[in-house]
Image 1 (cartoon, rainbow, N blue to C red):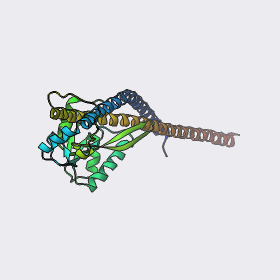
Image 2 (image 1 turned 45 degrees about the horizontal axis):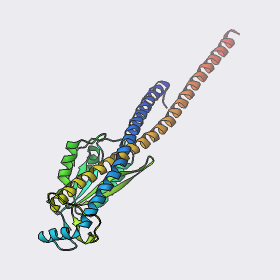
Image 3 (image 1 turned 180 degrees about the vertical axis):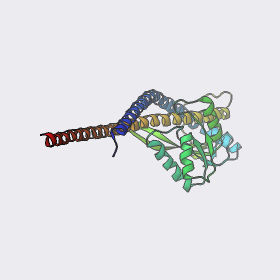
Image 4 (image 1 turned 135 degrees about the horizontal axis):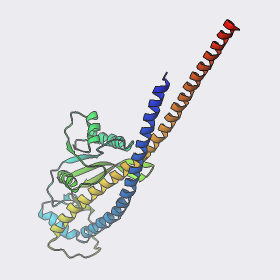
Length: 293
């Protein structure tokens, strides 16, 4: 049983932890709101860019097929004008630190399901994610990249993109924001090429290309890949901040419950001490009366 001194110390520690938890929740809430604005704006922008890219491919299906024939590809195969290694990579977009609630672990679980059943190379982003991965698979080769949780560093992001763009198939595992109270582990698959059988022959809009169709397609493939991946990073950050807000709110609730328990225990200890003092006083008074009464 704890004595009053230990109870007081524990109450002080719990109160300090409560202040820290509230600070984490407030900071995460501010970052979540700021990131949410950027994510929603980028969703619309990227949707429009992808629409234009689709129109370019559909409008000039014949020209794309002609380019593919020069590259020796057949209908049903994929055409790409960038160099790829023909391999598949599974990318875990995790976190550098902890206290992000359940979304980091649930994303790792989804990632490990694919890694264990498929032959693919592994890339880990985030120190905390690397620690969790090594706890599951110590023998599996991997590539690692650091990336801050609170902001996107252009240089670090470029290094990651340069690494994964060499792969033919890219499967990115990340947390996706649905609402403040719900974030889900998700997979985003990026294919390096265009499937020729998917090209529509119907002409939508005519475009003039300068300097050439091939170079325009290379530009689109590179820029859209980079933009899509950056959007996934932002989506992941948004989910993590929302998950931290919820985790800190739950922690705050648990702290209040524990603080209430400790205060009640302190009151009981004080009552027991007071009862003992009163009992001792009565015993002393009774003994004095018997001796001198």
